[in-house]
Amino acid sequence: MRIAISVVGLLLAAAASAGPQHSAPQSATQPTGPGNPTANGRSDSVNANPRDTSCLFDVERGELPGCLRENANGELFVAPQFLKELNFDSRRLAAVHSPTQGWMYVTRDGKVVITGVAVMDNWADSFHNGLVRFVRDGKYGFANRKGQVVIPSVYDGAMNFDKGLASVCKRCVSKCSDPECEHHLFSEGEWFQIDTRGNVVARLHPPD
Image 1 (cartoon, rainbow, N blue to C red):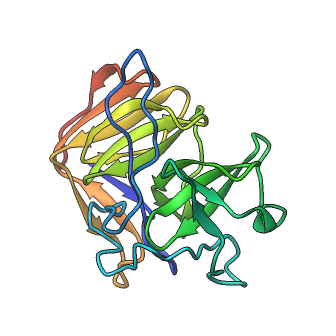
Image 2 (cartoon, rainbow, N blue to C red):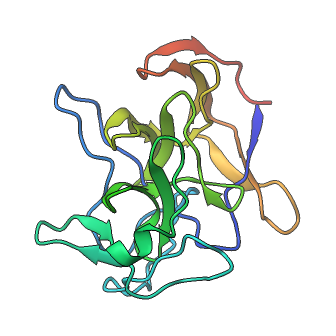
């Protein structure tokens, strides 16, 4: 089985996902600092300045210094003067990129609720069936719009949900699917279908 996924763009490809599901939902934000894994399980910011407060939400404008802040509790937020420029969706979330935290989703009051969002088509991955993909420590998981971990980051690859099901894999690898390596695909490994609660509902055919 070879399933294509676009994960490399003209920006830094980020990603961090979530931990296991508990009765008290975990947060899908990560501690601040460099070295978060990319959507391919590699770090895109090993040499990044952990104090870099710039962020990007408009390709034409590029990185804007001073737009990302941290409060006394270590929680990230976007500086108020930039909020009116963000492109919020119908659920009141906007995608923002940080050199140290990767792609993030931000609420209308500027709070960062999800960090390290996987990359798709040179931008933050979108929500499907209410969930978005993350990568943490090289593993994929899913979180909801509140930033709560719904499916733990235990998979080496994951596709987006469609009609309540998603294909995920263990021991699979990400490979370039074009000469320029602008797109990747997952291949090999063991493949499963899961529902939006993370339950395995089917074992897929092994890869070719």
